Image (cartoon, rainbow, N blue to C red; front, side, top):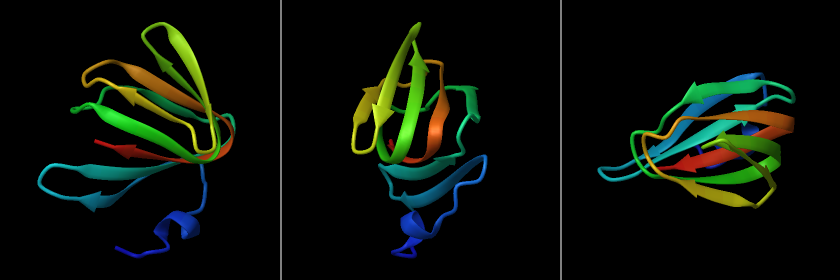
Length: 95
């Protein structure tokens, strides 16, 4: 893995990059451009989301959670959710 992948990854619309995988854990870097949508989907495992840059709205179970840089949120597997970016954003999904 390139040590600088998080810093070097440009924010263009929506991009998901697998930056680490082991037998039990996967870490995804998501980049989402301002006003873009990460469409409704589910996670196959309980997941931990942490915002590295920007500000996002995380929609899950009929609520909206606004998260800014260094804020995090944990959610259970198989629950539909989606994300919009209030500004260019990068966040990790660890599951």
